[in-house]
Amino acid sequence: MTAYESKTGAATVIALDAMGGDFAPDEIVLGAAAVASPNLRVLLTGRRHEIERCLAGAGPAARQYLDIVEAPETIGFDEDPVQAVRAKTDSSLVAACREVAEGRADGVVSAGNTGAMLAAAMFNLKRIKGLKRPGLCAVLPTPGKPTIFIDVGANAEVRPVHLLEFANMASIFAQDVLEVPNPSVGLLSIGEESIKGNELVLEAHALMAASTQLNFKGNVEGRDIVRNVVDVVVTDGFTGNVCLKLMESTSSLIVEEVKKVAMGSLRARLGGMLMMKDLRRFKKSIDTEEYGGAYLLGVRGLAVVCHGNSSRRAIASALKYAARASEQRLIGKLEERIAALDAATVK
Image (cartoon, rainbow, N blue to C red):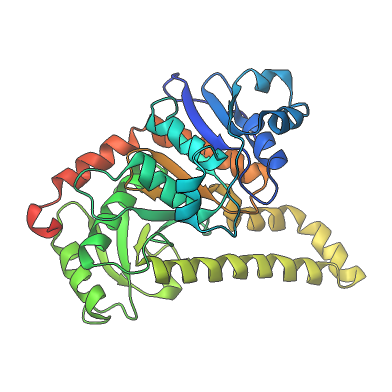
């Protein structure tokens, strides 16, 4: 993983929860060290002595672009998210969000308790004016080009207007952060026809079809999510979370089974050696760490939620994409799009 290179030349500052994650703080800190540069400074929040121990394994060139913000408390994965955020104001996760809220950082990244990250972002960063619900946006590394999937867990129950907001925010993210021109949008349903789906889908379909700001292509089915049928797939957080976890586990299973087959016999091992480059390319094309994590769109600050088992590579990727989003003035563009939504549809 190379150091981050800014397109504008301006330095971006990202706050990183150094104590959040299954492999914290070692993997988290080393992920930051891999991309820290004059263009990307990282504020590591957590227990100073533990972070400094990890930094001993990083080169001096990277360390000069890493700063430590003392935060003695941590929030565990088994804690109630809202209660923990309210009670542990000096936790590494809350401290990282506070750095953004108080203007010392441009974005926040954490591999800690997902619910706590969502709560801390909402409490500290607040919603964009006029927005009903933020949405959690995942970038799926599907073969060919990535697919943006929203909502993947922030809202188990939604109304049609929320799906319209998700579609607008994810479209801007796709266009400005992933450089997808005029991203196409699909609404997840049980059939391609506009008459298919429950009441939520039918009403959301009508709103999206009437929108002049979306490149709406209609309904898509579950099988279409990974086939690049559209650039952005929109659904509620309950359905999205189930789909995301199923796809991630399936991807991991495929890679594991291919490895087993490739080592099953002498002939298979020889064939595996000949195909090594292609197999590595295939693994990368479905690697969930390529984009680092999911992005909470709709709060007044960049917030990236990483997997609890994130490696240093995933953390480095999350930092790079958070910096790119900051460079592209993503939050300002989201605010402009939400403000521009027709007042009649945002009631």
